[in-house]
Image (cartoon, rainbow, N blue to C red):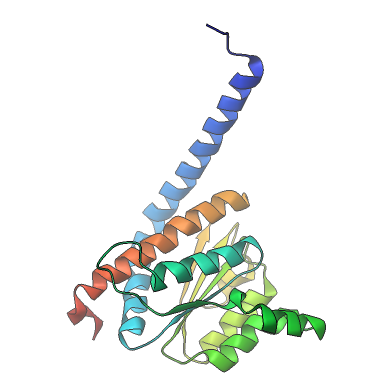
Length: 205
């Protein structure tokens, strides 16, 4: 049997530490936020019940989270769950690139909310540290129009944590991968519990 090298041992230790950190951060987050998560799901379900849509945004890697959460709602992977209207604003490359040409790329999400959103809709913004001015401005615009606003952020939450959104879920870790992994679990939970509320529609009136 080949002996395990120091490099292999170090790699195993690194991987174990990585897994331990991800699990510990997520467990602590959900233990702390379980009640607010349930409240957010109820609020989201009521908006969907009234004909609202989910509009999501984020930059870079967070743009993929906006796309992912939109797909989850529009195309449920569990048979029998209803499709719910959702849109990732990051998909509008024509508008984003047009505004970039004019030097106004930072207002793209805010512009989309101001034109596309209706008061019964839901706005969800992602940021790894809460310091994304365009996402912050977009959620402000959404809130001013009456949308339900949810911010999914990391680190200390930055200015987004104190912006007065309806729900701001802060994953208190500076590792963007840990933050994103926890956010991904969170929006899967949001999706699942929204459907639980739809199974008890008397709670949505």
